Length: 61
Ligand SMILES: [Zn+2]
Image 1 (cartoon, rainbow, N blue to C red):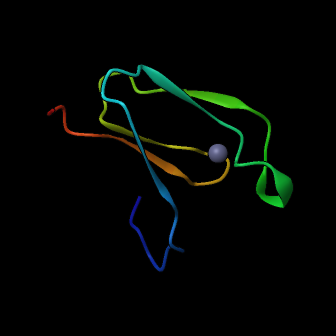
Image 2 (image 1 turned 180 degrees about the horizontal axis):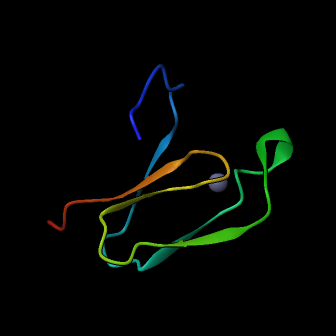
């Protein structure tokens, strides 16, 4: 919802052709069970475990 004083969540750029991403939080203390996050028709998705944001790059060479 509204973003208020959110910590600087990392943004990971992924290939525009990917339909889903897998996130495990990066392992270590911040890790979490591996989850797959489908993009559906969206250009970005946020991991509900660790808050990482995955954004598709603009499709240009
Ligand atoms: Zn995650």
